[in-house]
Image (cartoon, rainbow over all chains, first blue to last red; front, side, top):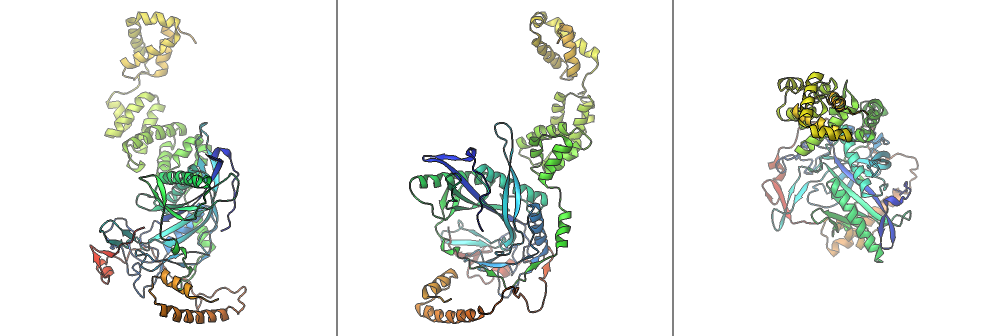
Length: 500
Length: 95
Protein backbone atom coordinates (compact mmCIF):
# COMPACT_ATOMS: atom_id res chain seq x y z
CA UNK A 1 0.00 0.00 0.00
CA UNK A 2 1.21 3.49 -0.77
CA UNK A 3 1.45 5.54 2.36
CA UNK A 4 -0.30 8.87 2.09
CA UNK A 5 -0.10 11.42 4.86
CA UNK A 6 -3.60 12.77 5.29
CA UNK A 7 -2.93 14.74 8.44
CA UNK A 8 -1.52 18.17 9.09
CA UNK A 9 1.07 18.14 11.87
CA UNK A 10 -0.30 19.95 14.92
CA UNK A 11 1.89 20.97 17.86
CA UNK A 12 -0.71 19.88 20.41
CA UNK A 13 -0.10 16.28 19.40
CA UNK A 14 3.69 16.45 19.45
CA UNK A 15 5.81 14.70 22.02
CA UNK A 16 8.94 16.49 23.09
CA UNK A 17 12.30 14.80 23.13
CA UNK A 18 15.77 16.03 24.00
CA UNK A 19 16.34 17.26 20.44
CA UNK A 20 12.96 18.86 19.90
CA UNK A 21 9.44 17.77 19.01
CA UNK A 22 8.46 14.41 17.56
CA UNK A 23 5.30 13.19 15.93
CA UNK A 24 3.94 9.67 16.47
CA UNK A 25 2.46 7.86 13.49
CA UNK A 26 0.14 4.93 14.18
CA UNK A 27 -1.68 2.44 12.04
CA UNK A 28 -3.63 -0.56 13.28
CA UNK A 29 -4.61 -4.02 12.16
CA UNK A 30 -7.53 -5.26 14.18
CA UNK A 31 -8.58 -8.90 14.20
CA UNK A 32 -12.26 -9.14 14.99
CA UNK A 33 -13.89 -12.52 15.45
CA UNK A 34 -17.06 -12.74 13.42
CA UNK A 35 -20.15 -13.55 15.44
CA UNK A 36 -21.33 -16.82 13.91
CA UNK A 37 -22.45 -20.25 15.04
CA UNK A 38 -19.96 -22.23 13.00
CA UNK A 39 -16.51 -21.65 11.57
CA UNK A 40 -15.52 -19.90 8.33
CA UNK A 41 -14.96 -23.09 6.35
CA UNK A 42 -16.37 -25.89 8.54
CA UNK A 43 -19.43 -26.84 10.53
CA UNK A 44 -17.69 -26.93 13.92
CA UNK A 45 -18.94 -24.68 16.69
CA UNK A 46 -17.32 -21.37 17.60
CA UNK A 47 -18.47 -21.40 21.24
CA UNK A 48 -15.92 -20.06 23.69
CA UNK A 49 -14.80 -22.26 26.57
CA UNK A 50 -15.36 -25.77 25.19
CA UNK A 51 -13.02 -28.59 26.25
CA UNK A 52 -9.74 -29.00 24.31
CA UNK A 53 -10.26 -29.92 20.65
CA UNK A 54 -14.01 -30.44 21.09
CA UNK A 55 -14.96 -27.77 18.58
CA UNK A 56 -12.82 -29.22 15.85
CA UNK A 57 -13.85 -30.84 12.58
CA UNK A 58 -11.53 -32.80 10.33
CA UNK A 59 -11.35 -29.68 8.14
CA UNK A 60 -10.06 -27.55 11.03
CA UNK A 61 -7.50 -30.21 11.91
CA UNK A 62 -6.37 -30.18 8.25
CA UNK A 63 -6.80 -33.89 7.73
CA UNK A 64 -5.85 -34.99 4.21
CA UNK A 65 -8.60 -34.67 1.64
CA UNK A 66 -10.73 -32.23 3.57
CA UNK A 67 -12.10 -29.30 1.60
CA UNK A 68 -13.17 -25.90 2.92
CA UNK A 69 -16.73 -24.71 2.19
CA UNK A 70 -17.42 -21.10 3.04
CA UNK A 71 -20.00 -20.06 5.64
CA UNK A 72 -22.30 -17.60 3.88
CA UNK A 73 -23.25 -15.93 7.16
CA UNK A 74 -19.61 -14.92 7.69
CA UNK A 75 -19.55 -13.36 4.22
CA UNK A 76 -22.68 -11.43 5.09
CA UNK A 77 -21.15 -10.25 8.37
CA UNK A 78 -18.01 -9.02 6.60
CA UNK A 79 -20.05 -7.12 4.00
CA UNK A 80 -22.21 -5.54 6.71
CA UNK A 81 -19.10 -4.47 8.62
CA UNK A 82 -17.68 -2.99 5.43
CA UNK A 83 -20.89 -1.05 4.92
CA UNK A 84 -20.69 0.17 8.51
CA UNK A 85 -17.21 1.49 7.74
CA UNK A 86 -18.62 3.23 4.64
CA UNK A 87 -16.20 1.19 2.61
CA UNK A 88 -15.97 -0.09 -0.91
CA UNK A 89 -17.49 -3.58 -1.14
CA UNK A 90 -15.77 -5.80 -3.68
CA UNK A 91 -18.25 -8.01 -5.53
CA UNK A 92 -15.43 -10.38 -6.31
CA UNK A 93 -12.71 -11.31 -3.87
CA UNK A 94 -10.17 -14.09 -3.71
CA UNK A 95 -8.87 -16.35 -0.95
CA UNK A 96 -5.14 -16.91 -0.70
CA UNK A 97 -2.92 -19.15 1.35
CA UNK A 98 -0.61 -17.38 3.76
CA UNK A 99 2.09 -19.95 4.46
CA UNK A 100 3.91 -20.25 7.74
CA UNK A 101 4.82 -23.06 10.06
CA UNK A 102 3.54 -23.24 13.60
CA UNK A 103 2.13 -26.14 15.61
CA UNK A 104 -1.24 -24.45 16.14
CA UNK A 105 -1.68 -24.01 12.38
CA UNK A 106 -2.33 -27.56 11.19
CA UNK A 107 -2.81 -26.63 7.52
CA UNK A 108 0.62 -25.04 7.39
CA UNK A 109 -1.13 -22.01 5.92
CA UNK A 110 -3.87 -19.65 6.91
CA UNK A 111 -6.65 -19.11 4.40
CA UNK A 112 -6.77 -15.34 4.07
CA UNK A 113 -7.30 -12.70 1.42
CA UNK A 114 -4.30 -10.91 0.04
CA UNK A 115 -4.59 -9.07 -3.26
CA UNK A 116 -8.34 -8.97 -3.57
CA UNK A 117 -10.04 -8.48 -0.18
CA UNK A 118 -13.81 -8.52 0.26
CA UNK A 119 -13.83 -4.90 1.46
CA UNK A 120 -11.68 -2.03 0.21
CA UNK A 121 -11.16 1.53 1.38
CA UNK A 122 -13.45 3.17 3.89
CA UNK A 123 -13.44 5.82 6.58
CA UNK A 124 -14.26 6.18 10.21
CA UNK A 125 -14.81 9.34 12.22
CA UNK A 126 -13.26 9.15 15.65
CA UNK A 127 -14.03 11.55 18.41
CA UNK A 128 -11.18 12.51 20.70
CA UNK A 129 -11.86 14.34 23.91
CA UNK A 130 -13.24 16.05 25.80
CA UNK A 131 -10.30 18.45 26.14
CA UNK A 132 -9.91 20.98 28.96
CA UNK A 133 -12.60 23.15 27.42
CA UNK A 134 -14.96 20.16 27.26
CA UNK A 135 -14.72 20.04 23.47
CA UNK A 136 -14.50 16.97 21.27
CA UNK A 137 -12.39 16.85 18.16
CA UNK A 138 -13.68 14.75 15.27
CA UNK A 139 -10.97 13.19 13.12
CA UNK A 140 -11.38 11.10 9.99
CA UNK A 141 -9.31 7.93 9.95
CA UNK A 142 -8.91 5.99 6.74
CA UNK A 143 -9.60 2.27 6.57
CA UNK A 144 -7.37 0.52 4.06
CA UNK A 145 -9.25 -2.76 3.77
CA UNK A 146 -11.12 -5.53 5.54
CA UNK A 147 -10.54 -9.14 4.67
CA UNK A 148 -11.77 -12.53 5.78
CA UNK A 149 -9.41 -15.09 7.24
CA UNK A 150 -9.17 -18.09 9.54
CA UNK A 151 -8.01 -17.91 13.11
CA UNK A 152 -5.27 -20.30 14.27
CA UNK A 153 -5.39 -22.68 17.23
CA UNK A 154 -4.01 -21.95 20.65
CA UNK A 155 -0.75 -23.18 22.17
CA UNK A 156 -0.27 -23.48 25.90
CA UNK A 157 3.33 -23.31 27.01
CA UNK A 158 2.97 -23.47 30.76
CA UNK A 159 1.54 -26.96 31.23
CA UNK A 160 4.78 -28.85 30.89
CA UNK A 161 8.49 -27.93 31.06
CA UNK A 162 9.46 -29.41 27.71
CA UNK A 163 6.23 -29.66 25.73
CA UNK A 164 3.61 -27.30 24.35
CA UNK A 165 -0.09 -28.20 24.35
CA UNK A 166 -2.18 -27.41 21.31
CA UNK A 167 -5.93 -26.81 21.26
CA UNK A 168 -7.48 -26.31 17.82
CA UNK A 169 -10.87 -25.03 18.98
CA UNK A 170 -10.16 -21.61 17.53
CA UNK A 171 -8.63 -23.05 14.39
CA UNK A 172 -10.80 -21.99 11.47
CA UNK A 173 -12.95 -19.50 13.37
CA UNK A 174 -13.81 -16.59 11.05
CA UNK A 175 -11.92 -13.37 11.56
CA UNK A 176 -12.17 -9.99 9.92
CA UNK A 177 -8.85 -8.27 9.71
CA UNK A 178 -9.52 -4.56 9.54
CA UNK A 179 -6.50 -2.52 8.49
CA UNK A 180 -6.36 1.22 9.08
CA UNK A 181 -4.27 3.73 7.20
CA UNK A 182 -1.38 5.24 9.15
CA UNK A 183 -3.63 8.16 10.06
CA UNK A 184 -3.41 8.26 13.84
CA UNK A 185 -1.06 10.66 15.57
CA UNK A 186 -1.45 9.95 19.29
CA UNK A 187 -2.26 7.14 21.68
CA UNK A 188 -5.57 8.86 22.42
CA UNK A 189 -6.48 8.72 18.75
CA UNK A 190 -5.51 5.05 18.58
CA UNK A 191 -7.65 4.27 21.60
CA UNK A 192 -10.54 6.26 20.13
CA UNK A 193 -10.17 4.36 16.85
CA UNK A 194 -10.29 0.97 18.53
CA UNK A 195 -13.16 2.06 20.76
CA UNK A 196 -15.12 3.31 17.77
CA UNK A 197 -14.43 0.20 15.73
CA UNK A 198 -15.60 -1.91 18.64
CA UNK A 199 -18.76 0.19 18.97
CA UNK A 200 -19.53 -0.17 15.26
CA UNK A 201 -19.11 -3.97 15.13
CA UNK A 202 -21.18 -4.30 18.28
CA UNK A 203 -23.97 -2.15 16.80
CA UNK A 204 -23.87 -4.33 13.71
CA UNK A 205 -23.68 -7.55 15.72
CA UNK A 206 -20.82 -8.70 13.52
CA UNK A 207 -18.36 -9.15 16.41
CA UNK A 208 -19.04 -9.19 20.13
CA UNK A 209 -15.99 -6.98 20.75
CA UNK A 210 -15.09 -9.01 23.81
CA UNK A 211 -11.41 -8.31 24.17
CA UNK A 212 -11.00 -10.45 27.31
CA UNK A 213 -11.95 -13.55 25.37
CA UNK A 214 -9.78 -12.53 22.45
CA UNK A 215 -12.68 -11.69 20.12
CA UNK A 216 -10.83 -8.50 19.26
CA UNK A 217 -7.06 -8.06 19.16
CA UNK A 218 -5.00 -5.26 17.74
CA UNK A 219 -1.62 -5.23 16.04
CA UNK A 220 -0.34 -1.70 16.42
CA UNK A 221 2.20 -0.18 14.04
CA UNK A 222 4.14 2.66 15.60
CA UNK A 223 6.79 4.95 14.18
CA UNK A 224 8.06 8.40 15.06
CA UNK A 225 9.34 11.26 12.95
CA UNK A 226 10.19 14.91 13.13
CA UNK A 227 6.86 16.76 12.65
CA UNK A 228 5.74 16.64 9.04
CA UNK A 229 8.85 14.71 7.93
CA UNK A 230 9.13 11.40 6.12
CA UNK A 231 7.49 8.40 7.80
CA UNK A 232 9.95 6.66 10.10
CA UNK A 233 10.67 2.94 10.32
CA UNK A 234 7.82 1.22 12.13
CA UNK A 235 7.61 -1.51 14.71
CA UNK A 236 4.58 -3.73 14.95
CA UNK A 237 3.31 -4.50 18.42
CA UNK A 238 1.42 -7.77 18.15
CA UNK A 239 -1.79 -8.96 19.75
CA UNK A 240 -2.60 -6.18 22.18
CA UNK A 241 -5.80 -7.26 23.87
CA UNK A 242 -7.23 -4.20 25.59
CA UNK A 243 -7.85 -0.60 24.63
CA UNK A 244 -5.93 0.61 27.66
CA UNK A 245 -2.92 -1.54 26.74
CA UNK A 246 -2.97 -0.12 23.21
CA UNK A 247 -2.50 3.33 24.73
CA UNK A 248 0.25 2.15 27.08
CA UNK A 249 2.06 0.20 24.39
CA UNK A 250 2.11 3.20 22.02
CA UNK A 251 3.33 5.59 24.72
CA UNK A 252 6.13 3.23 25.68
CA UNK A 253 7.10 2.34 22.13
CA UNK A 254 7.17 5.97 20.94
CA UNK A 255 9.40 6.92 23.88
CA UNK A 256 11.69 3.99 23.16
CA UNK A 257 12.03 4.89 19.49
CA UNK A 258 12.65 8.56 20.25
CA UNK A 259 15.35 7.58 22.75
CA UNK A 260 17.04 5.29 20.20
CA UNK A 261 16.94 7.93 17.45
CA UNK A 262 18.11 10.77 19.69
CA UNK A 263 20.95 8.56 20.76
CA UNK A 264 22.07 8.41 17.14
CA UNK A 265 20.72 4.89 16.59
CA UNK A 266 18.22 3.60 14.05
CA UNK A 267 14.99 1.65 14.38
CA UNK A 268 14.89 -1.93 13.14
CA UNK A 269 11.63 -2.89 11.54
CA UNK A 270 10.54 -5.69 13.83
CA UNK A 271 7.70 -7.35 15.63
CA UNK A 272 7.39 -6.59 19.32
CA UNK A 273 5.26 -7.82 22.18
CA UNK A 274 3.63 -5.68 24.84
CA UNK A 275 4.09 -6.87 28.41
CA UNK A 276 1.19 -5.46 30.41
CA UNK A 277 2.82 -6.32 33.73
CA UNK A 278 5.99 -4.36 33.05
CA UNK A 279 4.22 -1.86 30.77
CA UNK A 280 6.89 -2.22 28.09
CA UNK A 281 7.34 -3.64 24.61
CA UNK A 282 10.08 -6.07 23.73
CA UNK A 283 11.40 -7.64 20.60
CA UNK A 284 10.05 -11.03 19.53
CA UNK A 285 13.19 -12.87 18.59
CA UNK A 286 12.12 -15.48 16.05
CA UNK A 287 9.48 -15.19 13.34
CA UNK A 288 11.54 -12.65 11.39
CA UNK A 289 12.54 -15.18 8.81
CA UNK A 290 9.04 -16.56 8.66
CA UNK A 291 7.85 -13.22 7.35
CA UNK A 292 8.06 -14.66 3.86
CA UNK A 293 4.47 -15.85 3.65
CA UNK A 294 4.60 -16.99 0.00
CA UNK A 295 0.96 -16.04 -0.66
CA UNK A 296 -0.80 -17.72 -3.53
CA UNK A 297 -4.49 -18.18 -4.47
CA UNK A 298 -6.05 -21.11 -2.61
CA UNK A 299 -6.81 -23.73 -5.27
CA UNK A 300 -9.50 -25.26 -3.02
CA UNK A 301 -11.67 -22.16 -3.23
CA UNK A 302 -13.30 -20.38 -6.13
CA UNK A 303 -13.43 -16.59 -6.08
CA UNK A 304 -16.06 -15.23 -3.71
CA UNK A 305 -18.67 -13.43 -5.78
CA UNK A 306 -22.01 -11.80 -5.05
CA UNK A 307 -24.25 -9.22 -6.67
CA UNK A 308 -24.72 -5.53 -5.99
CA UNK A 309 -28.36 -6.36 -5.21
CA UNK A 310 -27.17 -8.56 -2.34
CA UNK A 311 -25.05 -5.68 -1.00
CA UNK A 312 -27.92 -3.20 -1.39
CA UNK A 313 -30.22 -5.50 0.51
CA UNK A 314 -27.76 -5.76 3.39
CA UNK A 315 -27.27 -2.00 3.32
CA UNK A 316 -30.99 -1.34 3.57
CA UNK A 317 -31.11 -3.62 6.57
CA UNK A 318 -28.31 -2.01 8.61
CA UNK A 319 -29.24 -0.70 12.03
CA UNK A 320 -28.78 2.97 12.83
CA UNK A 321 -25.05 3.41 13.44
CA UNK A 322 -23.54 5.39 16.32
CA UNK A 323 -22.67 8.52 14.32
CA UNK A 324 -26.17 8.78 12.90
CA UNK A 325 -27.73 8.06 16.27
CA UNK A 326 -25.58 10.68 17.94
CA UNK A 327 -26.55 13.29 15.35
CA UNK A 328 -30.21 12.44 15.82
CA UNK A 329 -30.07 12.65 19.61
CA UNK A 330 -28.47 16.09 19.31
CA UNK A 331 -30.78 17.47 16.63
CA UNK A 332 -34.09 15.84 17.53
CA UNK A 333 -33.84 15.59 21.31
CA UNK A 334 -31.65 18.59 22.01
CA UNK A 335 -28.93 16.70 23.84
CA UNK A 336 -25.42 18.08 24.16
CA UNK A 337 -22.78 16.41 21.98
CA UNK A 338 -21.14 15.24 25.19
CA UNK A 339 -24.27 13.49 26.49
CA UNK A 340 -25.11 12.05 23.09
CA UNK A 341 -21.56 10.71 22.74
CA UNK A 342 -21.84 8.87 26.04
CA UNK A 343 -25.24 7.41 25.24
CA UNK A 344 -24.23 6.00 21.86
CA UNK A 345 -21.05 4.25 23.04
CA UNK A 346 -23.02 1.04 23.51
CA UNK A 347 -26.06 0.11 21.52
CA UNK A 348 -27.65 -1.31 24.67
CA UNK A 349 -27.21 2.01 26.48
CA UNK A 350 -28.66 3.92 23.53
CA UNK A 351 -31.61 1.52 23.39
CA UNK A 352 -32.16 1.89 27.11
CA UNK A 353 -32.02 5.66 26.85
CA UNK A 354 -34.43 5.77 23.94
CA UNK A 355 -36.89 3.60 25.83
CA UNK A 356 -36.73 6.01 28.79
CA UNK A 357 -36.87 9.17 26.66
CA UNK A 358 -39.83 8.00 24.60
CA UNK A 359 -42.60 10.54 25.25
CA UNK A 360 -40.51 12.21 27.96
CA UNK A 361 -38.09 15.10 28.34
CA UNK A 362 -34.97 14.08 26.39
CA UNK A 363 -32.50 16.07 28.43
CA UNK A 364 -33.90 15.09 31.82
CA UNK A 365 -33.93 11.45 30.70
CA UNK A 366 -30.32 11.78 29.51
CA UNK A 367 -29.26 13.22 32.87
CA UNK A 368 -30.86 10.34 34.71
CA UNK A 369 -29.45 7.66 32.47
CA UNK A 370 -25.95 9.14 32.42
CA UNK A 371 -25.52 10.44 35.95
CA UNK A 372 -27.68 8.16 38.01
CA UNK A 373 -28.11 4.91 36.15
CA UNK A 374 -24.68 4.63 34.50
CA UNK A 375 -23.09 5.97 37.67
CA UNK A 376 -24.78 3.31 39.79
CA UNK A 377 -24.04 0.54 37.27
CA UNK A 378 -20.43 1.55 37.12
CA UNK A 379 -20.18 1.54 40.90
CA UNK A 380 -21.81 -1.89 41.09
CA UNK A 381 -19.62 -3.20 38.25
CA UNK A 382 -22.69 -4.13 36.23
CA UNK A 383 -23.43 -3.78 32.53
CA UNK A 384 -26.55 -2.09 31.23
CA UNK A 385 -28.09 -5.49 30.47
CA UNK A 386 -27.94 -6.33 34.17
CA UNK A 387 -29.51 -3.07 35.33
CA UNK A 388 -31.83 -3.69 38.28
CA UNK A 389 -33.83 -0.65 37.18
CA UNK A 390 -35.71 -1.11 33.91
CA UNK A 391 -36.31 1.72 31.43
CA UNK A 392 -39.99 1.65 32.46
CA UNK A 393 -39.13 2.08 36.11
CA UNK A 394 -36.68 4.91 35.46
CA UNK A 395 -39.24 6.52 33.16
CA UNK A 396 -41.78 6.21 35.98
CA UNK A 397 -39.46 8.08 38.34
CA UNK A 398 -38.98 10.84 35.78
CA UNK A 399 -42.74 11.09 35.27
CA UNK A 400 -43.23 11.59 39.02
CA UNK A 401 -40.68 14.44 39.00
CA UNK A 402 -42.35 16.06 36.00
CA UNK A 403 -45.78 15.80 37.62
CA UNK A 404 -44.41 17.46 40.73
CA UNK A 405 -45.31 14.44 42.85
CA UNK A 406 -41.72 14.13 44.11
CA UNK A 407 -38.79 16.51 44.16
CA UNK A 408 -35.57 15.81 42.29
CA UNK A 409 -33.94 15.08 45.61
CA UNK A 410 -36.53 12.54 46.71
CA UNK A 411 -36.27 11.02 43.25
CA UNK A 412 -32.68 10.07 44.02
CA UNK A 413 -33.87 8.20 47.12
CA UNK A 414 -36.65 6.60 45.13
CA UNK A 415 -34.13 5.49 42.50
CA UNK A 416 -32.09 3.82 45.18
CA UNK A 417 -35.14 2.01 46.57
CA UNK A 418 -36.16 0.79 43.10
CA UNK A 419 -32.55 -0.25 42.45
CA UNK A 420 -32.41 -2.30 45.64
CA UNK A 421 -35.95 -3.54 46.02
CA UNK A 422 -37.67 -3.10 42.68
CA UNK A 423 -41.33 -2.20 42.36
CA UNK A 424 -43.46 0.37 40.62
CA UNK A 425 -42.14 3.86 41.41
CA UNK A 426 -45.63 5.32 41.80
CA UNK A 427 -46.68 2.62 44.27
CA UNK A 428 -43.46 2.99 46.23
CA UNK A 429 -43.96 6.75 46.55
CA UNK A 430 -47.52 6.15 47.69
CA UNK A 431 -46.79 3.39 50.19
CA UNK A 432 -43.77 5.12 51.71
CA UNK A 433 -45.30 8.55 51.86
CA UNK A 434 -42.60 10.09 49.74
CA UNK A 435 -44.93 12.51 48.03
CA UNK A 436 -43.76 16.05 47.80
CA UNK A 437 -45.67 18.48 50.01
CA UNK A 438 -46.95 21.24 47.79
CA UNK A 439 -49.63 22.26 50.25
CA UNK A 440 -48.52 25.77 51.16
CA UNK A 441 -50.21 25.55 54.55
CA UNK A 442 -48.21 22.54 55.65
CA UNK A 443 -44.93 23.99 54.43
CA UNK A 444 -45.75 27.32 56.02
CA UNK A 445 -46.29 25.62 59.34
CA UNK A 446 -42.88 23.98 59.10
CA UNK A 447 -41.23 27.25 58.12
CA UNK A 448 -42.88 29.02 61.05
CA UNK A 449 -41.58 26.41 63.45
CA UNK A 450 -38.00 26.81 62.27
CA UNK A 451 -38.24 30.60 62.36
CA UNK A 452 -39.69 30.54 65.87
CA UNK A 453 -36.92 28.26 67.10
CA UNK A 454 -34.09 30.33 65.66
CA UNK A 455 -34.63 34.02 66.34
CA UNK A 456 -30.89 34.75 66.17
CA UNK A 457 -30.62 33.35 62.66
CA UNK A 458 -33.65 35.38 61.63
CA UNK A 459 -31.83 38.53 62.73
CA UNK A 460 -28.68 37.53 60.84
CA UNK A 461 -30.67 36.72 57.72
CA UNK A 462 -31.98 40.23 57.56
CA UNK A 463 -28.44 41.47 57.06
CA UNK A 464 -27.32 38.49 55.02
CA UNK A 465 -30.08 37.22 52.68
CA UNK A 466 -28.07 34.18 51.63
CA UNK A 467 -28.87 32.68 55.02
CA UNK A 468 -32.30 31.90 53.59
CA UNK A 469 -30.69 28.75 52.25
CA UNK A 470 -30.07 27.58 55.79
CA UNK A 471 -33.77 27.88 56.59
CA UNK A 472 -34.70 26.02 53.42
CA UNK A 473 -32.31 23.27 54.47
CA UNK A 474 -33.78 23.04 57.96
CA UNK A 475 -37.35 22.82 56.68
CA UNK A 476 -36.31 20.18 54.17
CA UNK A 477 -34.84 18.23 57.02
CA UNK A 478 -37.93 18.54 59.19
CA UNK A 479 -40.21 17.51 56.32
CA UNK A 480 -38.00 14.62 55.31
CA UNK A 481 -37.09 16.36 52.06
CA UNK A 482 -40.66 16.28 50.84
CA UNK A 483 -41.36 20.01 50.70
CA UNK A 484 -41.67 21.35 47.18
CA UNK A 485 -38.36 23.25 46.86
CA UNK A 486 -39.80 26.16 44.87
CA UNK A 487 -42.78 26.71 47.17
CA UNK A 488 -40.54 26.40 50.22
CA UNK A 489 -37.93 28.82 48.94
CA UNK A 490 -40.57 31.42 48.11
CA UNK A 491 -42.16 31.04 51.52
CA UNK A 492 -38.89 31.36 53.43
CA UNK A 493 -37.97 34.49 51.56
CA UNK A 494 -41.39 36.01 52.16
CA UNK A 495 -41.33 35.21 55.88
CA UNK A 496 -37.84 36.61 56.33
CA UNK A 497 -38.74 39.67 54.34
CA UNK A 498 -36.07 39.02 51.74
CA UNK A 499 -36.83 40.45 48.36
CA UNK A 500 -34.81 39.84 45.25
CA UNK B 1 13.74 -17.09 -13.22
CA UNK B 2 15.79 -19.78 -11.55
CA UNK B 3 16.69 -20.76 -8.01
CA UNK B 4 20.05 -21.44 -6.47
CA UNK B 5 20.83 -23.94 -3.73
CA UNK B 6 20.58 -21.25 -1.03
CA UNK B 7 17.01 -20.47 -2.09
CA UNK B 8 16.08 -24.13 -2.08
CA UNK B 9 17.48 -24.52 1.43
CA UNK B 10 15.58 -21.47 2.58
CA UNK B 11 12.28 -22.67 1.10
CA UNK B 12 12.80 -26.09 2.66
CA UNK B 13 13.49 -24.47 5.98
CA UNK B 14 10.34 -22.31 5.75
CA UNK B 15 8.33 -25.46 5.10
CA UNK B 16 10.20 -27.31 7.86
CA UNK B 17 11.30 -30.02 5.46
CA UNK B 18 14.68 -31.57 6.22
CA UNK B 19 16.82 -31.89 3.10
CA UNK B 20 20.33 -33.26 2.73
CA UNK B 21 23.00 -31.60 0.59
CA UNK B 22 22.41 -34.24 -2.07
CA UNK B 23 18.69 -33.52 -2.03
CA UNK B 24 19.36 -29.82 -2.40
CA UNK B 25 21.35 -30.11 -5.58
CA UNK B 26 18.90 -32.60 -7.06
CA UNK B 27 15.90 -30.43 -6.11
CA UNK B 28 17.55 -27.28 -7.42
CA UNK B 29 17.74 -28.97 -10.81
CA UNK B 30 14.14 -30.18 -10.64
CA UNK B 31 12.78 -26.85 -9.49
CA UNK B 32 14.65 -25.04 -12.24
CA UNK B 33 13.12 -27.38 -14.80
CA UNK B 34 9.67 -26.47 -13.48
CA UNK B 35 10.52 -22.79 -13.44
CA UNK B 36 11.79 -23.08 -16.98
CA UNK B 37 8.41 -24.41 -18.01
CA UNK B 38 6.70 -21.55 -16.17
CA UNK B 39 9.01 -19.16 -18.02
CA UNK B 40 7.80 -20.67 -21.26
CA UNK B 41 4.16 -20.15 -20.19
CA UNK B 42 5.01 -16.57 -19.38
CA UNK B 43 5.67 -15.94 -23.05
CA UNK B 44 1.95 -16.14 -23.76
CA UNK B 45 0.33 -12.73 -23.85
CA UNK B 46 -2.51 -12.78 -21.30
CA UNK B 47 -3.11 -9.05 -21.30
CA UNK B 48 -6.73 -8.42 -20.27
CA UNK B 49 -7.51 -12.13 -19.77
CA UNK B 50 -9.12 -13.04 -16.45
CA UNK B 51 -7.40 -15.94 -14.68
CA UNK B 52 -9.42 -19.10 -15.17
CA UNK B 53 -10.52 -20.47 -11.84
CA UNK B 54 -12.48 -23.49 -13.02
CA UNK B 55 -12.91 -25.40 -16.22
CA UNK B 56 -16.68 -25.11 -16.23
CA UNK B 57 -18.16 -21.79 -15.08
CA UNK B 58 -19.42 -22.26 -11.54
CA UNK B 59 -20.01 -20.24 -8.42
CA UNK B 60 -18.43 -21.06 -5.09
CA UNK B 61 -20.54 -23.37 -2.94
CA UNK B 62 -21.62 -21.91 0.37
CA UNK B 63 -22.67 -23.37 3.68
CA UNK B 64 -25.41 -22.29 6.07
CA UNK B 65 -24.23 -21.08 9.46
CA UNK B 66 -25.14 -24.21 11.37
CA UNK B 67 -23.10 -26.41 13.69
CA UNK B 68 -23.08 -29.90 12.19
CA UNK B 69 -19.52 -30.98 12.81
CA UNK B 70 -16.94 -31.16 15.59
CA UNK B 71 -17.42 -32.90 18.93
CA UNK B 72 -15.18 -35.76 17.80
CA UNK B 73 -12.11 -35.15 19.87
CA UNK B 74 -11.10 -38.82 19.89
CA UNK B 75 -10.92 -38.80 16.08
CA UNK B 76 -9.07 -35.50 16.04
CA UNK B 77 -6.21 -36.59 18.27
CA UNK B 78 -6.26 -40.25 17.16
CA UNK B 79 -3.17 -39.93 14.96
CA UNK B 80 -1.23 -37.56 17.17
CA UNK B 81 2.13 -39.01 18.22
CA UNK B 82 1.46 -37.62 21.68
CA UNK B 83 -1.67 -36.24 23.24
CA UNK B 84 -2.80 -35.55 26.75
CA UNK B 85 -6.21 -34.60 28.09
CA UNK B 86 -7.29 -34.19 24.47
CA UNK B 87 -4.56 -31.67 23.69
CA UNK B 88 -2.00 -32.31 20.98
CA UNK B 89 1.37 -32.36 22.70
CA UNK B 90 4.35 -31.07 20.73
CA UNK B 91 7.97 -30.18 21.50
CA UNK B 92 8.02 -26.86 23.30
CA UNK B 93 7.61 -23.81 21.10
CA UNK B 94 7.84 -20.50 22.87
CA UNK B 95 8.25 -17.02 21.51
